[in-house]
Amino acid sequence: MKTKFSSIEEILDQLPELPDQLAGIQETLIANLIMLSEIPAPTFEEAARIKLQLQRMVECGLHNVSTDEAGNGVGIIRGKNPKRNILLVAHADSVYSEKADHTLSVRADEIIGPGVSDNSLGMAVLATLPSMLETLGIEFDANLILLGSTKGLGRGNLDGLRFFMENNRLPFDAGICIEGAQLGRLSYTAQGMFRGLISCKLPEELAWQRVGENSAIIALNDVINRILEIPVPRRPKTSIVLGAIRGGKSYNIMATQSSLRFEVRSDSAEIVEEIQKRINDIIADIASVYNADIHFEIVSSREPGGIDIGHPLVKSCRSVMEKLGLEPNISPSMSEVSELIGRGLPAVTLGITEASNLHDLDETIRIKPIYTGLAQLIAMLFAIDGGFCNEPE
Image (tube, rainbow, N blue to C red; front, side):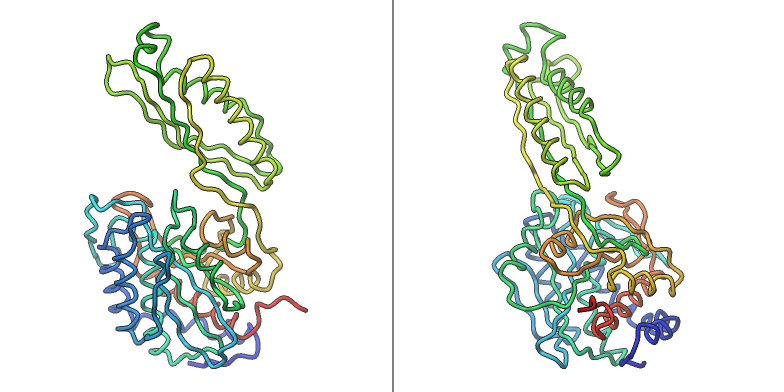
């Protein structure tokens, strides 16, 4: 296929043929996907998956591979110009522990299993990219830096990617964060956010002094009611999501412990900070009423930011998607792209295929749309490499 382009329009003209050309790497891609998926990689325990990813990169023709002190896996596809670099990131961790059955079920046009979409497919794309480019006869001007990042989810708080960016000395033209789903996803902004854990402990003797009126669940319920009274503006867009509640042991045993997991998001950093302060005040008040130990912990956080919808990188993404018949699903992201744009690097998050049952043990991806997702990725690499995603100086 043609590998040199003088405009984004020339890249778009090549797109209709690209998905069929990419179907030839199906066997390698699915083999990588199965092997990576079936290795458990809960946050902070990604080493085995990273090791396999680097091995597969080598077997697919890449020899510049290494790990860093944070456990990130890094591979480099050398370009013609050693001074230019494009960063591709896929997080290695998943929400499933080693206790879950990680065996995948492969059907005619579906692959089913925990974490297959989030984010084993993203990792498999990185591992397969060297052989993919070789099959298509593509060589870029810029180096492609392939990063399998660790410690991305939950308490990991993007620490793996943050370590890489803080210690990296390479200049990047742009970044692409690869997620398994959904195809058509386009994220180039991040909302301000924090995820919190409120833990309530009540001494057992206090719980039984006023049966029916005093328990960790009742205390936490009062905290929740007060949180729900916090004014939430429509603009800047703000939300408080109460995600999970735990507490108690049985029907007739007073609850001495309870917990709440929740998330606050806003386009305004000031509003996020104000809500955090209000929650601290609420907890102090409720703790004094119940004589309880109520602890508030910030599990992870993000700063708001992003690039403009008119940025050439975003405009190129939208043009590529529309040429492939995709409707861009534009939404802010709390994932790796937030770290990149927070450091001033133009970056987007793209999804590779269609998926369902996300974060369930029967998470499912469709095989056929993968090649449209890969065509989208290759086209964007051409666009960045050709300088068509640079802002005018």
